[in-house]
Length: 91
Image (cartoon, rainbow, N blue to C red; front, side, top):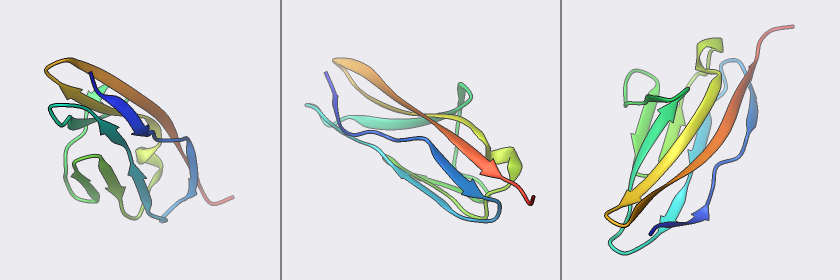
């Protein structure tokens, strides 16, 4: 079963900053990764770039705020790491 060597942590970013999250898991066979936002699958599009266990969001806006999960899985099991992205708007 996979095990985390690096989890994701809650972050607070100002609007229009960039987010870079990385999660890493060990396991045999090597785990594959998925990302979820508020329980829904997250896919690469527009400002969101996903590659393995890394998630990159450029020019964050208020709609990017939410709960994110990095999911690592192989044939022996699935593990989840959750973190919250808070976006701080103009005050």
